[in-house]
Image (cartoon, rainbow, N blue to C red; front, side):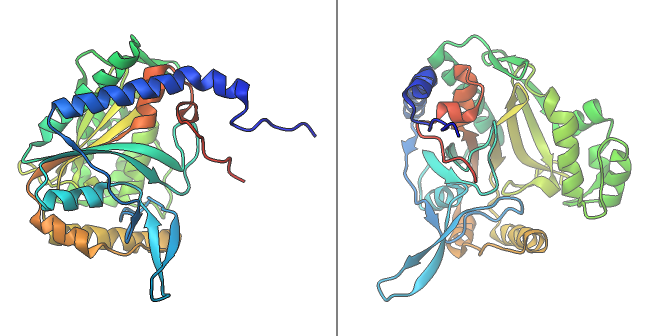
Length: 347
């Protein structure tokens, strides 16, 4: 049987070298940009009491032995968000981190089980300020590699052009013919109403929740149209998809959450941050109940984090996939071409 060359085979590594050089250039330029904006670069812990409390996020777990000989469960973080918000509660004003994060059940052209998240937070800043940050960061990366256009799977986008700004409701109306907000009552989704509106557009099962149907329409009918010729800022997510974002003060059916797309690829996810600890606890409990029902597991709540949420100032924050950004800014075809040591292949 012919032996398959490992990732460190010299010829394969040499072929990836231009992409790795681009990664170095982008990282250097981003550090300089954040420093010029007055951000402090932080380093937060990888091992956490809770890796995050969203239904469909899965984290590797491990166990630590205490000095007393007890075994305690810890998780590899899916995001540095909990730790960074604790720092905001402690008084930090502008922080950023190149964070190594981990996700179970993820591997593909755009996904790795271990990757780098560029995450930053501004205390006292509005939702639109961190949206502007995100557009600027993507432009910095493009200038660092001097790439004229991002491209992926036949789609192209000018990263320096004025971005398209599109609400989620407008996107559903334009690309799927669905009046999305008509299926949202306050902070809850009307599953029957969305199922009826989406019938014939996506496959719907009896087990699908409102969020499941929303995600199917988003992936199949909305995302392929985003970030064409220029970046798209998709904003004002419906309230049932708020995650850790605050509800809009002007419309309780939507949350201060946005995502940025280029060439149909999601690059960033940002929030006007929720600072209501009681509301956050309710959202986490609901998500973990659903996770238990679907996957037979749940993650503990990080009580220190919930205490920090109650002390946090108003803030805006963004999580941006550095590897995806480098992939587009370097012309790479796959995300594993832009990481120095790709994870071992799955069995």
